Length: 87
Length: 241
Image 1 (cartoon, each protein chain N blue to C red):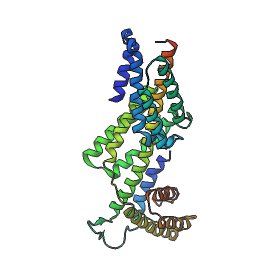
Image 2 (image 1 turned 90 degrees about the horizontal axis):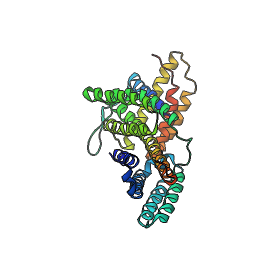
Image 3 (image 1 turned 45 degrees about the vertical axis):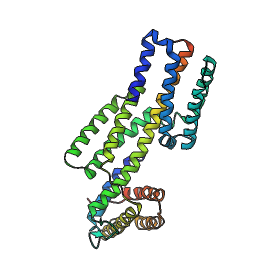
Image 4 (image 1 turned 180 degrees about the vertical axis):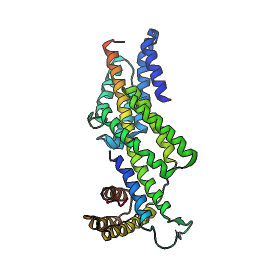
């Protein structure tokens, strides 16, 4: 639906994170278990991934809906033809 | 594979007269396969359908149970009527998603996927996915009837599954930190633009609103709304290059 915006957004994220000097402070933030990279590339990849996953899921949902509707309609037509004695 | 079996049985019924002897059983077998598929994909279907996931699943299970009670031609006929009713409850609005609008949306989306490949993949993975993407783009243009569409959607499904293995899954808390960093950088960038006498419009106010939204993010739904608003703002950001 708004998918074309996804990659304009990603492009903007890359540009803004890279151009404006990126994150200040250390390259990693100490977490309880493993350090999470906070360099611009890592931040960009994480945000881009999130957006990609959400948008692709929506697109797949739409595709699955359409696939089932088309299959169901074909099945119903076949059943109707069967009732009418068509081959 | 399931679709191939479906079509094989379907055309066997039409082309081989002797198969018509067991036509009812075959039809019911197809309906059963179809209903199983509806039940397992209820979550995805509910995103577009007016019915909720649990209702779709409940209708599917109810129909499956009704099938087990079929004893004769009359009960078969009754079942098929019920099946048709349920079908139109789940798939109500033909105009909501149609082949033409779907193809238009997909053509645009696929053209952009190449950019995501550049960010998330490299080397042979990128090369292979680009090759798959090119094939999908080409086949989409050939989709002109329903069977072609089903095959195309299966191909697309495989492709996206492969593509998503390259996407990172991250906790919301980390993504919120990333988004805060992004907004900090966007503020700095806005200041740079202003110092270069470039009109930034309402960008500063919009960034403040985004910060406020981000403060209230506690789960994915909130973050989705934030991302939608972020997209709107980022699209209007003036570029210096």
